[in-house]
Length: 148
Image (cartoon, rainbow, N blue to C red; front, top):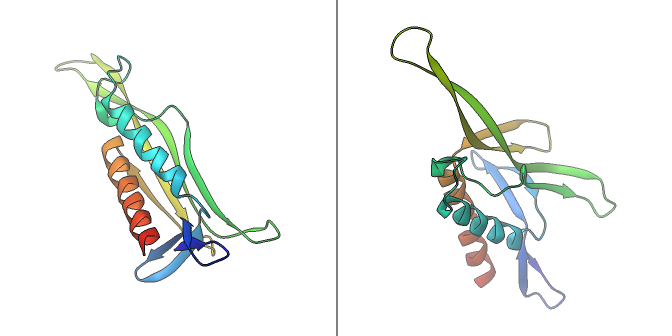
């Protein structure tokens, strides 16, 4: 939903989260710029040639927490929901052909969590490609919203 200035022109957005057609939460007042910056950061991380993360799906911007959007009332009380994205490194045991030989492989995934104002949570575990597509879709919807 657009944030409007004093003469009614849209200049930024606040996200309305919906689940099964019902409002789930309202978060991230004026978060459009941050989302656009994150989309660019994910694209750059995927394009980089990193020795530590040879699989592009494991490449993300360096921050542990990529975003945390909450709703705050005018007096600063947090309510109305939350949407956040944190990176986690996950070790996976890759067994060898025969016997106990094998090795640990590290993967990184983005954990996107949404919490309603009532405390009900949802989680998605995304690769960097999936996170990039998700954030790019949010940015496109933001730009469409602001163009109206």
